[in-house]
Length: 137
Image (cartoon, rainbow, N blue to C red):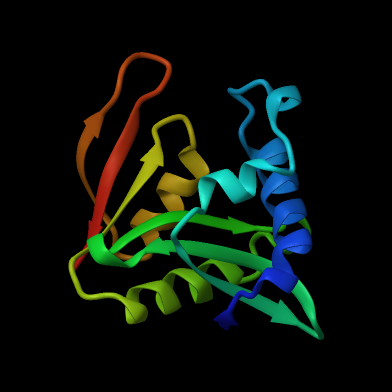
């Protein structure tokens, strides 16, 4: 794990785009772009996982609120422990309790977080855009 630099952004943009296009079956993937990464991580601390200088995944954190905003693993490395390493490193970087929001439709991600000690607190949002607020303490 290491902090991302601007030199990593081209690969991070691709990881973000490819992961969302593969996993977010409930959205219009044609509306997703490479530039979404920059917009969705403004002002955040970004940790990345890599192997042989190849980015496997990343997490972006909003440190003032102890909040994990994004956690994405490249589809080629999904299910290989990268997400666990990223979420554990994120928790270590912040003060507990740590929070995140997980889209209610993303059952795979919800299961991942619950299996790693996260608790659902409340479901919020309007129909079609519901998400769970989750906490790790």
